[in-house]
Image 1: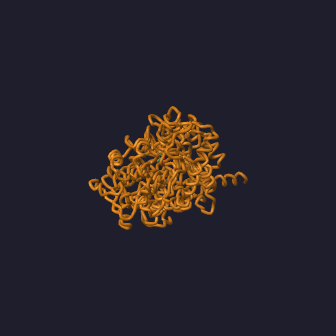
Image 2 (image 1 turned 120 degrees about the vertical axis):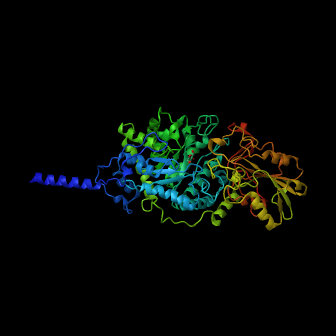
Image 3 (image 1 turned 180 degrees about the horizontal axis):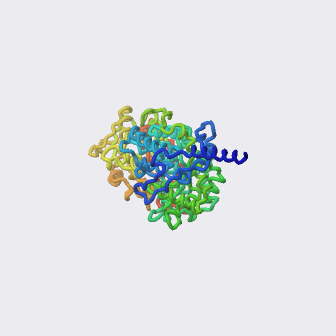
Length: 638
Ligand code: GLC
């Protein structure tokens, strides 16, 4: 009798397991096709699963991590590896997403759908989601984007000042409002994951990413990043603290490959590394930041993306980080292994949970599967990575609302007056008055002002890199405004009408002018393209037209008001004496009229330099550097 019962029991269990082993929803889910730009693809996903399998992970009353555990227990190794992959939108076809079960798709700088509109974005993102929901376990994917100073890839979205200007403004309340505003515009496009804030603590202004840093002061960086990230999280989008860590501390001359300083080596004691470059991460982890991006750079010769001590022992174990670590764009290829596959294993074993591999995502997935099967990667490491990724997806409601039908947005369109007003306030507060001899500012009723210089009437120059395209582009090069907004000149003319000041650009009328505004600056650039030997405004990174504007400033007998529109404290030592007044505008973004508000006295200067202003590049890193202005410097109207 006992044997009969045990036979019946076995039959019952077999019947159960056969039921729970769902056959793939679509043919694609079980087969994997080589995809464009990749040499191979994941081996066929096994269709049998080894656990009881049920969808109680859809029980929203359970804690996100518990739901993630339940889901994880049903996943095959191939499905787990898929969640650890992020491919670029231009390389990932919907069928890829289904076949490889990718955890995420991203836009790199400037990556936009053919129709760069809310509808175009929703159509693209939703089509990927449809492909995700066609996988066996229907795990939603995440779309990642660099909305680093507004939703800057998207036409018509508000473009806020770059981080260095926000550091000069140093207003945590406004940073929270900015985080919330950017979250709203991201949700309108169904892009829920932001590769921002950058919490670099930039030390050397020759770094092309200096403008992505709020300050050389860890406390300012921490306070502003926290407020911004909370504004994002409280409004349902996923911020990313980047680039972990020490991206802003690299030594000039150690840049990766032939870069001058970008992606180079930070050489510090652990104590200094922690106090300068890790502090912000500890506070952001305590505040619940869901993602951290590993840096291309190294600490004392060890690449962060394969640095187990800092990624796992410090960030995850000591700081208690429960989210997931994403590698940077193809950063795996710069690691110390002898092959791509070996580098994937190095990164995953060090603590990278998701690999940003724009085109080689399938190869990366195969390397993970092979790594586990060969014992190089413990499966427990893969389980930990997937658990972290799934927990974030559960926390942010992706399983309940994968098509974001119930997303609450305050606005129904991009570029609302309310959000532009927040950006304009930040512009006003980001301006730093460097000198004002004879109180030539504020401009006064009845004056006639000549406005010159390549940065006076150009939204692209105001925005800098990471705007419309990865490197950014001037209106001049673009053949017209790169996006909606106001230039500095637009604002001057608007306030001039109101106050009774005439602004003109016709140089032949210079004799009529009471003063000359000379707006000079840097070309837009991003990352290593902005690395500079000498911070010169007349070199390859200066706007064409700087020289003529500076020559006019030096030769006119009129009072000269210089506006510097640049991503960092550039070399102005040899011109400063020619200026009666000088204003550091940093990169104000789409709301240039904020500059005009302060120049015309509608608002006062409150901005303070977030970094020291070196007399010239030779002073950077010196024991007692000669400075033009100290960090914290900034004048105001009496
Ligand atoms: C870039 C940057 C990083 C950005 C990522 C995706 O190389 O280093 O800040 O988030 O790629 O665009």
